[in-house]
Length: 441
Ligand code: AMP
Image (cartoon, rainbow, N blue to C red; front, top):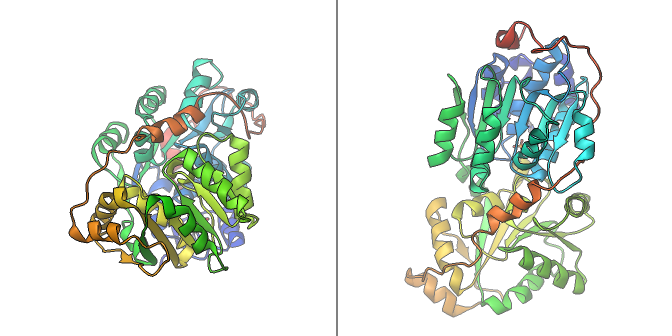
């Protein structure tokens, strides 16, 4: 078994990992870190939950600690692009955690908040920018951020980025990056356009891939409950009786649905909150912190809002609505069964969702166990499922996924970002030797 000490990491990072209680690198870390320390471009095929953030954060921190000089005003040495604000915040937290014994400066750039603190934070330049595409482009257009100093570029969750309609923004940003750079590309899937984008922006890259979601799925007890649409809320309340469910994320298809369910649960005396793209950044962070701290037992979320949320101890996932896209099912239930724990996933399935259930069973290559013992069992829905001939229903708001975050990433503002300490740089890149100096010494 590879150990962190085998990977060539420096002492301050090893110390931080020990403080965090990490004993061994995850497979993606063991495979990716040595390549990244050598300065290679990397194509990482891995989803959230595999430890991919540390896989790129550790080598980046190591390289920054060994680099000379300081970034120029308004620029940065490292740019990390990620599709959602939540992911940006989590990545920044990971850098703070792993880099606790090193001095690095970071700036978080995302929309939905005022832009001035972000502009101020960028004034003297920083080591690392962690950004969502829309706001970054806004600040670039206004001349507050320049990318000519970037030496390492990370594109995180590239497939999600494309799903959310950010492809043109990503390409515009990449066009402004120096050609001589290290590129790190992470995606859970590599179909179609993602693969083309990877081909366009990576150079002589190494490829690492970790086990597909199926391995996670196997550890989760999954049950489907056939129910009439009008009985779903009553079924949910039934499930929440007692304390078998310690901490659950309830997934809905729409933002409106998420609000409605959280409200109904609160009315019924449950502790619950909702997160989705229409909520302000503050409201989303507040809901997440209460959930993380155990102050609310249930978090009602849409797919995009929940993407990448990393909270331990989620005992149950409840799919109040089944997702249109079967991959979302795998992402949803992967929120439980973290850190080796087992989890339980319940899926409510009404008549118009049987086709989605069949799609899910196709991609996970397993039949989901039917729980017909609950008081709201709908035999008619079970019959449609058993017939294997479910009608395909066209759902109205398929465009919602795009809008949800697109809207959030654009309009302006700050969150974090400390002013960079002045290192006095004569201009140009931080390391006169260029990319070769990225090799671990
Ligand atoms: P990520 O895939 O980057 O979202 O990471 C998923 C979770 O795994 C996070 O909670 C990390 O803190 C945790 N993690 C990352 N690397 C390790 C490791 N080597 N040992 C234990 N936990 C880890």
